[in-house]
Figure (cartoon, rainbow, N blue to C red):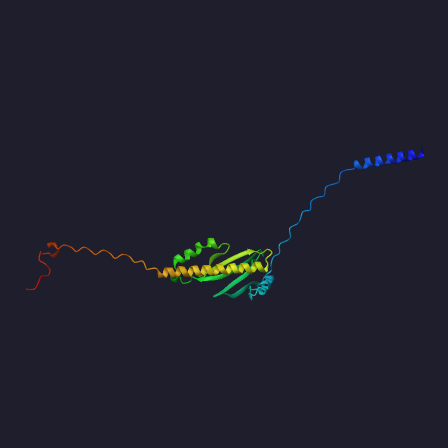
Length: 215
């Protein structure tokens, strides 16, 4: 009898405990973890110079009037081309700029209007590079990229693309100048000869010819 009571008490306790477990509040769902985007890395002017040096461009520092380095002059060869360009970072640090002089137009007597119009019309296909006029009389080509996580590979690719734009623009201009020079000069048509007037007595006053054959 004692064993029966003990078993009954144990069974009742188990049922009670089971009921308590099933009646517990459901677990709280875990909150989703949101990732914070990493801060983009910006090149400093010093880091830009180091990167250019490591790429083999031998940059020469350009300084402002206070002696601060603001960019780098590059001079190098691409096949038969000698290229000089200027690489810098914008004052607010958001852009990496590339710039170079391409065509001297200071002597306008040797600059065909047709070639100039073709150059500026080509700006649409050059973008994000573009042509602009720097006084006095020098056309330049410029381009930029966002200064965000710029790697050596990114920088090299951009310089290569910029070099291609420089060569294409100069070649196009030179071809246009040659075509204009080879074209025959347009000449105004010769005026029609004046009609020969018919002699009348009024032309000679007394009706006698002004000249006559000798006897």
